[in-house]
Length: 169
Ligand code: NI
Image (tube, helix red, strand yellow):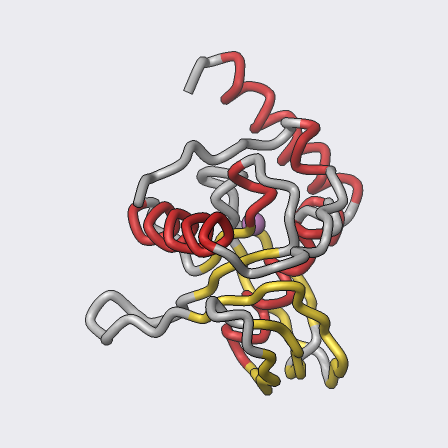
């Protein structure tokens, strides 16, 4: 297991459309372990493979609070098959350090995916778990949190991130 470096906006690799995983083999399982380790170390509630420069349709989510037992969800080739209602949540992203923006998403989703053993499953989620799934799923299509906010806020976030990049952090 290894902690992998996380790409930060405006790295163009974050805009890559990720490819489906053909087979959940040892390499994918290692990727999943690294994603989980990197997410927990950050710490964050979700991390998608494109954020660590692997353009494959894989992400991990764990919304458990620090004082709760961890609850890792692994999604390989996920597909959101149902979205219902709307919900506004203050979101962050490990590719946008220090940024937090109110974003509107579906309040509940149903997602179909494969797990770390390649087994298909279906999950119904609402609240923060639904938000995290939609946020991470976006990363697989090169969609970022700035794409969900207004032009003025987007410009402010962009400038903040450019300034941070120039600062070398
Ligand atoms: Ni993110």
